[in-house]
Image (tube, rainbow, N blue to C red; front, side):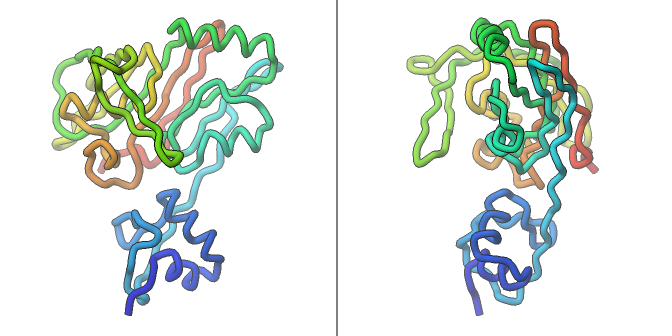
Length: 242
């Protein structure tokens, strides 16, 4: 006998259907080592689920102008905004972890936004990608983002895209996977994900852009330098490849 996955999970955990669907949509529900991708997908009613626990956001730095948070995967930037009561300076995708900046002071916010607009903010990420990368390379290819039904997807487009530049440097090779540093001058939606996929090395877990299924999208915002500030978020525990 089969039933929708979120309903089976709700009964198993003794929670509401809404809460069960939210857990699946966050990417926290597994059957064995396989993530449950579709909350409304049919599944055997005897299926045993495993629910991954989400880390809590960690404050990296705070003063009267800015709040730097180490955002865990599976939590949205907007949720952190709501909990803190401050304005976001930028956003990270739900499954991307790392440095997230919020501002407290209106005048400082204007200055910070100008720094982002003028590409004077240093943004360094790390990612695990498919395949072996032996040498550093750069990708300079315009990106077009299309938003539909509240979701965004980007693609490369020389005719309609906005300028986007990514520098990629290999850090470690494990089997047929490479850990890379990615530095972006621009900040287009899904920029690193799209550029790495274009290079033939999609990020592990990034199924939207051709990556193999994984526990999460293996992308972490490691470091940001803005005006006189510099913030760095340590790699999360789930960023180790076995």
